[in-house]
Amino acid sequence: DTEVTQTPKHLVMGMTNKKSLKCEQHMGHRAMYWYKQKAKKPPELMFVYSYEKLSINESVPSRFSPECPNSSLLNLHLHALQPEDSALYLCASSQEGTLSQETQYFGPGTRLLVL
Amino acid sequence: GQQLNQSPQSMFIQEGEDVSMNCTSSSIFNTWLWYKQDPGEGPVLLIALYKAGELTSNGRLTAQFGITRKDSFLNISASIPSDVGIYFCAGGSGATNKLIFGTGTLLAVQP
Image 1 (cartoon, chains in turn cyan, purple):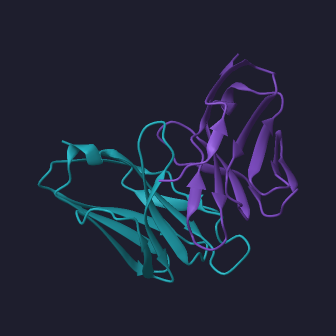
Image 2 (image 1 turned 90 degrees about the vertical axis):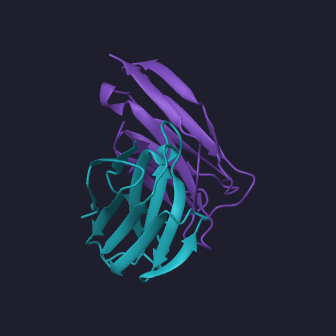
Image 3 (image 1 turned 90 degrees about the horizontal axis):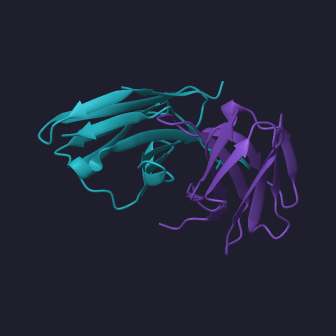
């Protein structure tokens, strides 16, 4: 099973709203990622969690707040977003400590529209 | 951020034709990955390569890890309409969890 699930599939929010994106994997992977993707562009890394600890923050604005409650779950809390934050948000996971540790499996994404 | 040089940028082919795309880098990588992405969906892993010179197939897809570790190519044989999408290469250095992505190749297949 190489499935990463994400909810919701679509999200529309106002600039004053607070919402959360959720990601789950049951592959036993200990690294989880959040990416932002604009149309026809490659994914841009936002955050990396390794063994439930934040290991990489790619200088993401504080209106995006990641959380890793346990080894299977990853959340992205959204607050006071801007219209330019509208994008496809992707979650991914990978093994740690193996030859294939950089082989990332992506979820289907959450399409976010900020009005 | 850093991106890999991926070519061609787009391809418009007839069903049944073979396709070839490649990625090049000025840096050495220890992992090369190829993904396919359909509109509004997440990238799906097609092939993973871990060793210089490695040639790996997945059905009609074949990919190779360049011997210099600075490039990789993906071939699709006998294309079909469902091959339509954007193909991304990605390289990993092995030192971090970061992947460097190619700029993508948009493939359109005319039935």
